[in-house]
Image 1 (cartoon, rainbow, N blue to C red):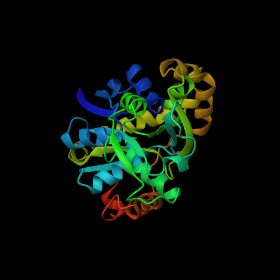
Image 2: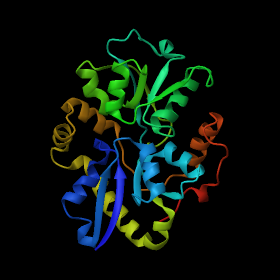
Image 3: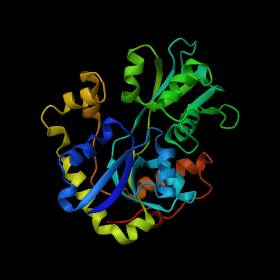
Image 4: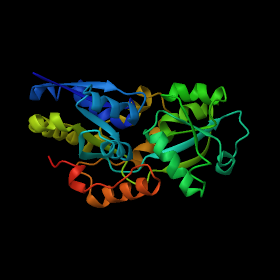
Length: 284
């Protein structure tokens, strides 16, 4: 049985993978798919792909495009979640910040440079007409626990993370959410190391076929809202809202979307150049 390592954030978006693993769907196809939780998000997963710690990543679109252009020898093989990610903009509940204008020139907590929390800080700054040189400052906090410590202790002033993941921290009075920023593109894609893809394309296709079967039927799974609420410690009504907003994909990313992401990243000086579509994606 072939072992294949896959990484992703330990969040509700990825429950479809856990269900397939629990049901033995991959082992039935002679694939020992090993899931690795990446609490540090996209930046940490990019490092995992580069180092060969994982073969496949379920990763933020803008983050992997930026890292491939920066030298990560991986390819996008499919969109996983085609709806935008709803980034909540959070401050410490006891802070004096009450609006996005109050955050101009303050310090953003980011999981690491090149992460989604880092890149979307630029998008937020641009949308609010901030100066990208003088109005953006960063504090690396690694993960959500680091953000809690960073904002509570005043090392950073605000933190951008997926709205529903952080909702329990808003509900319990740790954070206050003072804004939302939907990503301007599909949020999660599946990326594979090029070296692995060259010799294991058939296995990658099998893995995609299995998870796509699950995501096509995901919302119809009996009591799936309750399962998500219990597993990820979220309120049932929040899960139901998230399910209504979220759509999965079984197709690869379009050339139009690749252009849109690169145009935005290039405009913000996050990438030094724009690549051809064929150099970023692989058709399975």
